[in-house]
Length: 129
Image (cartoon, rainbow, N blue to C red; front, side, top):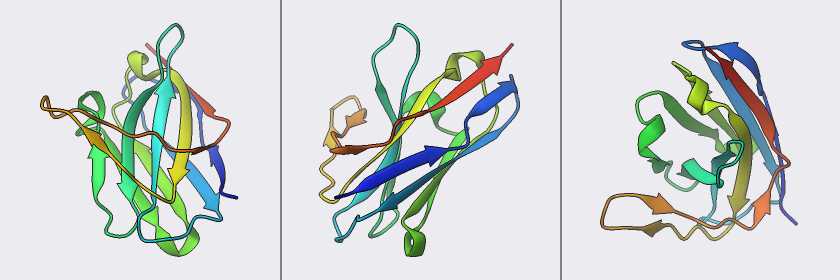
């Protein structure tokens, strides 16, 4: 059973930075990926970034490109999300998710999505203006 635990959320002001941590266990195989979703109040959950653990290929949604960076420590099955230049619209509950069989869905627009099976409980990020 894959377990996922995220941490690092908090309250920051606009323009500041925050780093989220996702620790996984039980995740094996070359086809695995770990990533981040977020859900703002009244909005649907959106995939914002993920990383394929075999080759560190990364994916980002447009709204966070250039501001957020995902990285991994494969030896520890740990993923970090460095969030810089935070904006009030980044306020959300951030969820880490993982799957041993990463199957990204890409669209002609360039957007992408994936449907991981294993989820953490979320960590809240609040960005004040």
